[in-house]
Image (cartoon, rainbow, N blue to C red; front, side, top):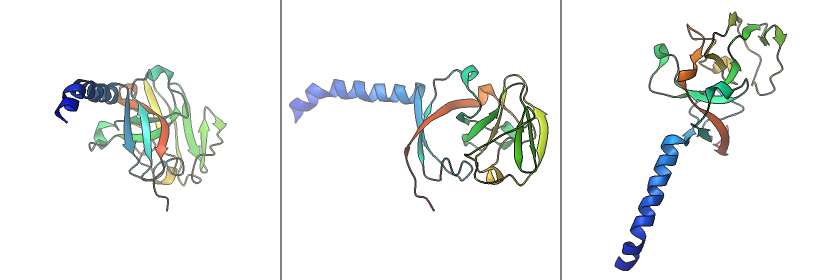
Length: 167
């Protein structure tokens, strides 16, 4: 046993170090804590989030993790879908999302929205984000400022690697 430890301590230490660097710099993993992204992501789902991203390359429809506006920050990182990028005009009327005046088809949305919103225009360097479970998501439509800054983005979800228990 001593001989084995003597031979393997350095490779094991290097592997642990590489894993920690990978987790700190490139990718992180998380568990979905709420129903705000249902049906796309359900409570208990486990997701991989790429941290090494260029926020200028994020697009409408991408699911991102971010720190919410400071007024609502409670230590949690949020996960939502990008609906609007800089210059986009967002409005919700009669339960339907309009992007730049055009009615949007969103097959990932759980149910028709029970609220009206906007119109608002997304400023430079900002995103407008919504959960897929629109009526039960604390997101851009509820925040005073309505937008998150690109600096608040922590990563982009790349895949779900474990399905949680569904109701």
